[in-house]
Image (cartoon, rainbow, N blue to C red; front, side, top):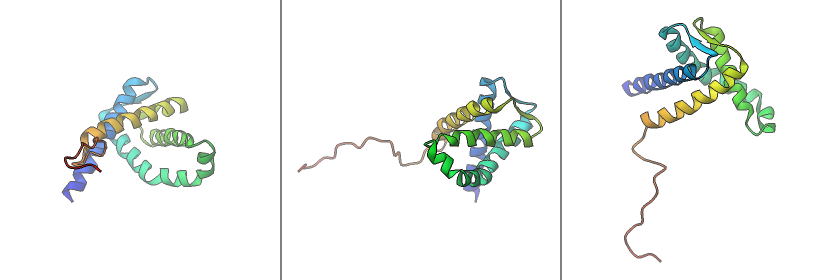
Length: 134
């Protein structure tokens, strides 16, 4: 149970850091306090876990027609939903949320690979084995 709690806190921290980086990159994203940043990261994780899968299922035809690019729109809408729910979190418009969601995804992916490295490295190039090759 402690491992699950540590993983949850680590994911929450990565999301918080990613949102903070996005707010530094885009003038249209702002947080009134650290508390609003932490609440926004927590709620964004909850929205991505609960609401986003339902929206993805409902928009499968549109996602298929656009070859998956509509998922970027869904990410932006999730960020705008969180900004509407958290009082201290402001996103100025759709395009800001669109590009910020891309930045949040990339930063989270980069930091997540550094924090959550497993013992097995799936990207390791296999070395040549000793022995007879047939």
